[in-house]
Amino acid sequence: MKFITYVNNKNELNEIHRLVLEGTLDKDLVEVIVSTRTLNRYSEGSFDELMELISLNQAYKLKLLLEWDVLKQESLFNVCTDELKKLPLHEFSAIRVQDPGALHYVKENFPWLKIQLILENGNHNFTGLERWKNYLGNQLDRLILSNELSRDHLQRYAKELNVPIEILVFGRILLFYTPRNLLSDIYS
Image (cartoon, rainbow, N blue to C red; front, top):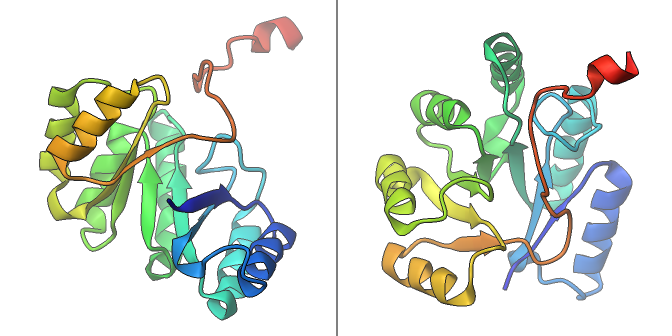
């Protein structure tokens, strides 16, 4: 089993590196998810802070994953793609995406970059998952599925799709997500 965690700042990255050095974590089984507030719904980090994490990790050599999980309208989508173009994408083992438009953008513009498809609130059926697998082909690195799926479903999907599957064990639980500011008028 892999240890996959979010890192928001250099102190957290230093702590993961310390755990690897002391042998608490196996470096080969550690994956670190990083992002910016532009690309990620939970991140508070800036582009410069992400670049600092990337630079620091060049010495640590941990497996970095970039997460682009926000759902954006066209004008904000373009802001995301502009930021993505400025990043040294070769420093990432894969990119985690949720939005189908973002997925298509990465597939078309960075065909060498592995994709981890976040489907925690997307497809829960075999046919849908199989279609995504076929669409992405060799670029697909992993499917990230909902923890609402039963053990039987997850075992069947892993076996029949022959693709690594990830589910959330500890961490944030998604209750509801929308990019719209549903309460903004109330608090304006």
